Length: 217
Image (cartoon, rainbow, N blue to C red; front, side, top):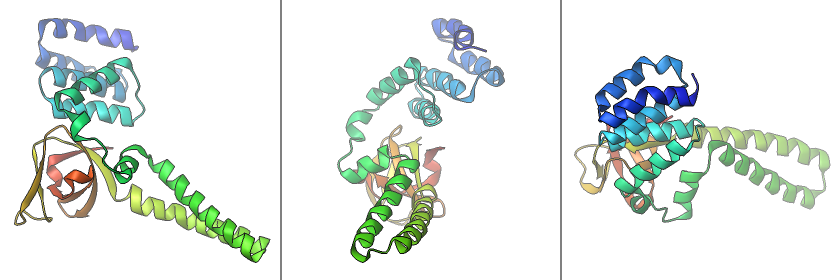
């Protein structure tokens, strides 16, 4: 089913503000459209219902999976303004910016490139070409494995589906040190069973319940 045909069945629902009906129709046609397009449409309807956090999650999920459209970008801009994300998610450090903007592939590339530069210096010092080639290959390989271990395995992004209490440790017994409004995008690290540690934005650093964050996969 092409995009224009897929939109037809939603137009009447939108016009009559029958958003529950829109969701039911959309679910019934889920197998007829791509997964990312389904997420864009569902996110759009949820936002119209006022479910900003879940609506944003669907849009962010579609974007993470490669979807690009005017509808997607317009609705993301709208929901971010509604939850004041442009202010609350502003990157306050280079560390924040790296976590929010670098893809896993980019991180792996820079790690491997760093190893290559390091051993280029080593080569210039010792003038041993065969040793340079061998060790560069070894360290590039282990640099790649390090990237997988430290970034792909442990770092996640997600949307706060509730107003989150940020605690000083991974247990309800710890003191609350901050609060994250629903709908905000966070970068987190899974350190304890059932708990995430917020890595970025750094102004929100602390521990949150994993069940209150819907991960973007």
